Amino acid sequence: MSSLPLGDLYSPLREVSEVYCAVEDGAVTGVCSIYHAYSAPSVVFGAVSSEAKRALIRKATSRVLKNFISLCRPDEIGLFNECSTVLQRRDEQQMVANPLKPVVNLLVKATRVRKSELEMLNKFYAEHDAEAWTPIQFKTGPYYCVKSQGTIVSAAGVHLVTPQIAQLGNIVTDEEWRGQGFGTACTFALASRLASKGRIISLFVRRNNNPAIHMYRKLGFSKTRDIAFLVMQKK
Image (cartoon, rainbow, N blue to C red):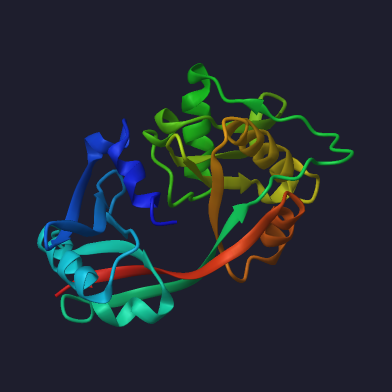
């Protein structure tokens, strides 16, 4: 999804992002965004040639103080070697719903998280170590949840939403409540709302997270590419 980093150009992400372009012969050949809402900056690249990406990596690492995170194709990890060292690698895959499939006999109903429930949502994610969550994500688009006795036990939301694409994220179900369709209900309610406006619905998932991958496939998601999630240290 070459347009994915361009989500940082949309409010509210643009207030916490830097966006850089590689330019050759007067034409833009690549885009890089540095997202500053997490504890470590997140560096993301659009479709770009290796040479342009090297230049963007040099620019990005000049703008971070020490550690940062990034996503890239597995065969591109070596492009970071000049400016940084890999501290941690996690293999993931991108999946896209094309199209989203209706859920048959879904007995659980997810509801949209209201602004007044943001504190409850923040507590839920904090208790479950949701690494890609920050309250600013709540401003980017809808979040849906399932509750038990007034407490959130499952939730799903977005990293970014543009007129063309929605990147889902923070899909979490409490361990004691898994296997009951709660995650499916949250993801379907969220994705169907976003897809109703004609957006492409995308997400990232760990390649060894078989239960989650199985759920996403039931909803019509299929793998589009392998990616590597990297924690990097600036040299």
